[in-house]
Image 1 (cartoon, rainbow, N blue to C red):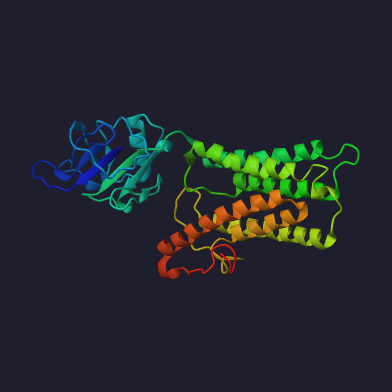
Image 2 (cartoon, one colour):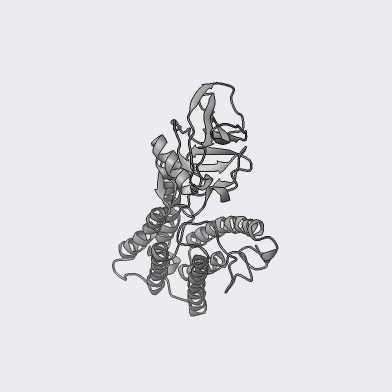
Length: 358
């Protein structure tokens, strides 16, 4: 892992020295000086070009490292950056010089581990980096688009359920009313998710590790796809029997309210995030946000409770339980993030996802 250490110093002469950068290559137990950053004499500081040269030498190992990151094998020998540079310029320069995809790089402050996002409108001066601070540059490994991961993971249930709906029921009697209704509700749920991925969701990061594609897809293709379909559309499944209107229609109502409420919450969250990839956001307000931290998860749980009431399948209950458990963890983290970001402006929630329960 490469560590860029900015150490303040001063020097007279033809130019003003702004700082010194030290690079620490923990993976090979090497460290060295990236040289001195100067503002040439007579040049306005706002337009000055800062240049650093790399000189490596042998040294001791730094222990405060992330053992799971990959080393950036090539630090630039020269890194020209104007004082008006943005964080996006920093990423671009490092990616170009190290011949690494910009999406594989992650830069954090050494002082507190704060992530420095790749945003074209974020000046370096506003990231908290100062003379004497340290940044960590990590290679995150092969990456894949967040949006593409969402599309592929939801595609599994969207294909599996209609396919098994036509293949599994009894050839003589065909699918029952509950099996047809189950297939329709589940297909509409994941079709909605695909459309939201394309037209609603905004992501604070462009990519995620490639491994997440297989992990996320297994959750949806196997647990939401094959698991539910195999125990819903076969002739021996409870959904193959007659419908109980006192259970079926309240379940459909819960599903409808859940899906519409979930969509509304997603639209509220979208309105709080800028389209330029910025991580800045406001305090969400609207339907459900006064009750829990994440009403989108609350309404999602309601929709899956409705699906479970229609399918009469333990497999639907299993998927819903796993999904609710994961969403609860995410909601707890978001509540903590809101409290840190907004302080006294944010109304703390006693429940993060299910009112009075969780």
